[in-house]
Amino acid sequence: MPGPPKALIFDLGGVIVPLHFKQAYSRMAALCHCEPDDIPRRIGKTDLVRRFETGQIEPEPFACELLDAVGAPPMPFYAFRDLWCWIFGEDTLLPESLFASLASRYKLVLLSNTNRLHFEVLTEKHPLLGHFHEKILSYEVGAMKPSPEIYQAAIARAACDPADCFFTDDVLPYIEGARAQGIDAVQFLSAAQLESELHSRGITW
Image (cartoon, rainbow, N blue to C red; front, top):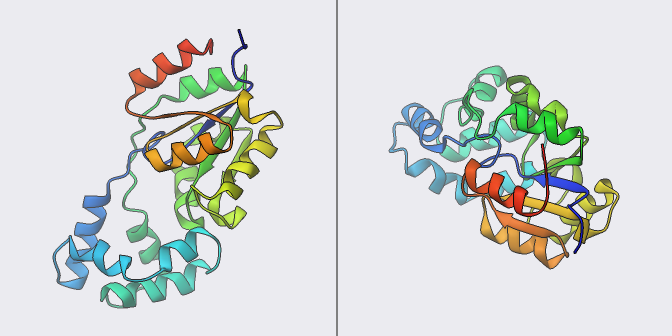
């Protein structure tokens, strides 16, 4: 039987930290005098998020373009930063103790579709991210899940064969993208379910 994985790869939003989109949309909608459901529709008509999360646009130009796209008034950049990061709270879905223990036994890799502003704020809020040995971020790599390039970057930084990597993400197409690269991957549903998946692979902490 094969041994336990050598590298554990975790998604960030929806696995380590919850995403509170509704509260963020409500706050932005109040500025735009529209319904909260209008905000994701207006953003979705642009390619701004894709460009931002692949590092093709810097934070301040992104802020200006996004505010214009949703119909919000201009605001200082620091105020936009707070607004854009309103999706994050102080809570986490998995405890820091889990990552502290896993990091002493396995290579921990973070693999996230994210942008510079979000990752800066999450790093400030959640010291547990310091337990990761490697961080593969879409805005640095220039590719987003489920593109093969971002998984290949994670495998390279894990410094082991794809079959020796375990990956969890809450988005099923991203799991399928990882499996296509030979990674053992499971969809994240809950902390208890993840612990069961880890135990079944001989992963201890």
